[in-house]
Amino acid sequence: AYNPKYSCPLVPSANHLETAILAGEKSFDLFKK
Image 1 (cartoon, rainbow, N blue to C red):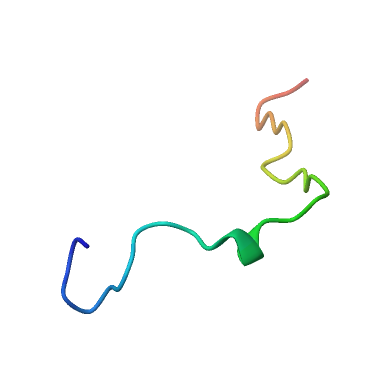
Image 2: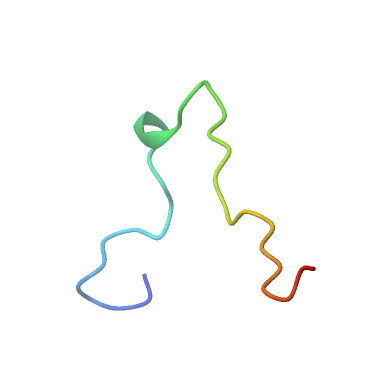
């Protein structure tokens, strides 16, 4: 582990989802004419 307060850097398999979640920023153009 990176620090004594962290137990494990690996994500447990119970935290994985079967469906994809598409997330992120939308295309934004401040100076679009």
